[in-house]
Length: 316
Image 1: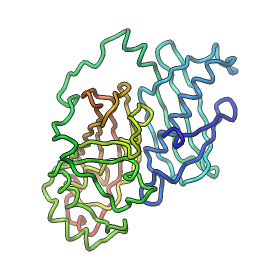
Image 2: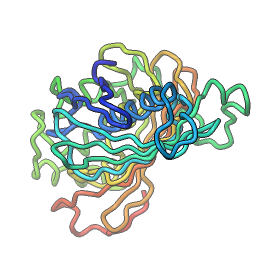
Image 3: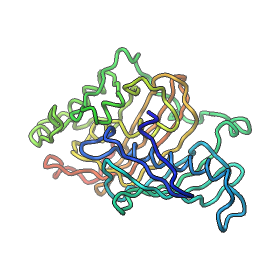
């Protein structure tokens, strides 16, 4: 896993790396993978800068806050496998948190921009309340044992696809819902006729999925890998509204703490679709039932022939 997030520093606030051909969604890299690469640059820049002399305009070197607390990411253009460069600017570094802005570039074009808050969960756990659950949404979904769930076999299930790297395991009812709303053939090609045929099957469905997720190679979960899990799920909108493509506009991830070893549980929900845009809320729990990450995604809804006469706004 570490080899997939291999980045190197070429100077203060400047980084480079390679987008591997191993985290594809169709023909482009997963947004979760691009996010994980840029967040790695951010935490490593804080670590490196903390040991150096302050830059011009800085009163002191920043603190080496090792953990991402929250990241707000804007996807500005498509990325591709190959080399990338990144800039990382430390906007503020205090005793408890640091605020950092970073951008990822390919061929001179900015592909993604992120503003992140960083801290140290080990220090925070010793100085304040730790994992106090104040709402049902903080509790993991009730699921059958993972051995009784079925792995999602995506149409793009090649060695380079996200779902060949992250195994999603769904209970029978959720897996059938996934099968009912697929609009691709087994080889990953889009099939409009298949989409039209399955539209009736998903009417009135619930825009929600819950299940387990694990890395294909047995790598244990980590905080740095949370974006890879959070972007690997089947879009829950497919449970209630047949669509082909759900491209991300903005993605915010909040990291709650380091996971314990073992499979993660996930739940993803969409409550509204309006004006061609939707929000998707995701949550991850570790093997002990502790909430470790949350996400909210703003995405566009691809319009298919079968959806042209359906309402522009709908509650899920």
